[in-house]
Amino acid sequence: MRVALFVTCLADTLFPRAAVATVRLLERLGHEVVFPEDQTCCGQMHVNTGYPDDALRLVRRHVRVFAPYDVVVVPSGSCVGSVRHQHAAVARRAGDERLAGRAEDVAGRTYELSEFLVDVLGVTEVGAYYPHRVTYHPTCHSLRMLRVADRPLRLLRAVRGLELVELPQAEQCCGFGGTFAVKNADTSTAMLADKMRNVLATRAEVCAAGDVSCLMHIGGGLSRLRAGVRTVHLAEILAATETGERERPGVRV
Image (cartoon, rainbow, N blue to C red):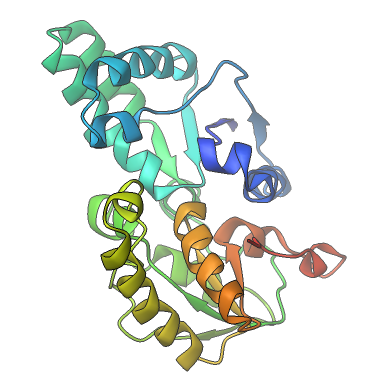
């Protein structure tokens, strides 16, 4: 299968390991991965902060760039949520029904990584090896907007050498929420403190998630505590093998 990678802003700019791991994983499973170089931000930040006109330009570009591909895979539940739930609405608000229809078409072929692996490819065993104690944080958009449910957990349970431990109060938000963390810093910090307390209670070596934005937030807090817990994107764990990738460091802040 020929798969287009939508890398997302944060992965491209700050955490490229997650994107590289996504490519490595999909290629190992026998698929061709292409990277459309004209891709930019999906516009989620612009919509969420009240700039629909700026978002509209980004929606138009996103649709133009990804319309030629049968499948688009994204290592981010947050950005897939924007593509599915915001793009067509932004176009309709601007009175562009044709763009809205094209946006819905692209959205229907866009998948968060764990969705693509489990629902489209029908696999949970991806040949990964990761000999670490891991807990998993289900990010808000993947949990509530995409409803990926236990797909990431099913993938992690199939990883050889991995000990998966349940995260207490896993469904609670970590407090990032994009610009929420900037506009409501005190509330965000309090939510982060709760999340870190629960991560540390698991005695895990690694906290995994499907969004680097949440990992950036949690990882930043853990690093300030010098807790010794790494934050690692789901794709990095699934791409790890016994021949070397398992030693690659996770997302660090």
